[in-house]
Length: 155
Image (cartoon, rainbow, N blue to C red):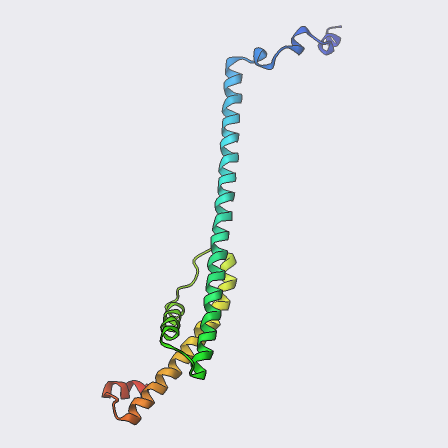
């Protein structure tokens, strides 16, 4: 009969949970809840930070892609001889930026995008060498080439 009494409803079953808890148990539950809440908040904030980093990274990627396209257009205009002073200055600034290695410092998502930037950088270096070679040849033909430049031309 004692066994059956365990399954009978007691008067205490309908009581408020806080009334049945001992102070130690209540403190443990409060600590557990506060730790859990802290973890949830930390996870959410780290997820938000990650999202913000990805968004800023994607913004930088699109900005570099736009600059890359602009530089390609300026190189085409230069090859056609239709470049004005302002466009020349802009082209020089973009070339300097790409040649100096001003690339993205982001997440692994960007590493794939860096590969796209690499060929442009190589193209600029090659075109830069060709332009420099042509400039030296022009100076040599005019007789205005210093000896240091002559040495550079043959290296």
